[in-house]
Image (tube, rainbow, N blue to C red):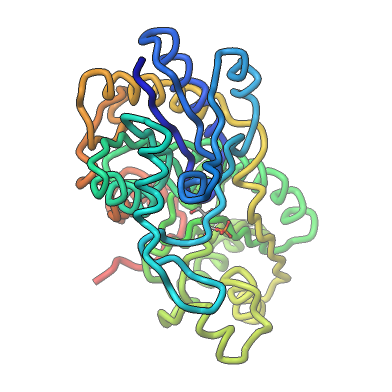
Length: 361
Ligand code: F6P
């Protein structure tokens, strides 16, 4: 009987358990394989004794669809090739991973992860000559080649609901409400939530902006007869001059918690209105997965197992034009899919009169 392994790597998000469930169902029902869930990302194969669970169908009920996070765990203590030791040094622990894989006797590994995890796990699998198939997940939705990564839809719903909840307070108090959403390098959550929630200003790391641009937009809103406004900003945005917020924080100006706080402080006088900031944080990652995340995760899981069965290894499943497809890992590993400044979302936002920054040069 064929034995396959599965692990979740990187930050958690909604829909991971739905993907696990789909892999187990497909592998056991259709192919009669054995499926081993590896705990805590790559850690489960690096530790001795190995840390894993063998799945059977009684463990993967429909309740997994409704469950946020990952039942396998996904702690990330560091890159196995460059593993941080307690004494401050780094060690290459990749051979422990490979030995663990051999000890468990698995013939292929399904990795549910983002672009960084895909690169590292692919390297680990190649080192041991073991095939890997990837399933993309990240609320940031910045995995290349796929329209959707698992977790994005739920995070977007949470961000959109947050705007719905902020709008009445903006209106009642005549305030500018700023919502800081996740998105370390990209603005997919910000631009989608901002368009869906009726924001006046959306700032994303992909586009530079000016404080005057924001202030002018808010003045326009006022001239149109509205005395309040909504702003959405991705956490990964820099200041208007291009400085990173963390640089400013470590430079001693710790009064800014993040880009949202920074903008509020800078804008209060410029826009002559009260500003308030909400930093949404990790509530975007947890909770009950959206229906779309469940559907995408299920389709990804089934297809990943079919790839292994067909011997199509070293590939990542992807969602393109309403279909599940697969692409080579090398087209995905370590590549960030940014918001296209001239794509549909950006043009839609501009078409609605939303300020999304200046055209990049
Ligand atoms: O990549 C997903 C993400 O949620 C980013 O949006 C965010 O910047 C980061 O992870 C937060 O990571 P952590 O959970 O380690 O604080």
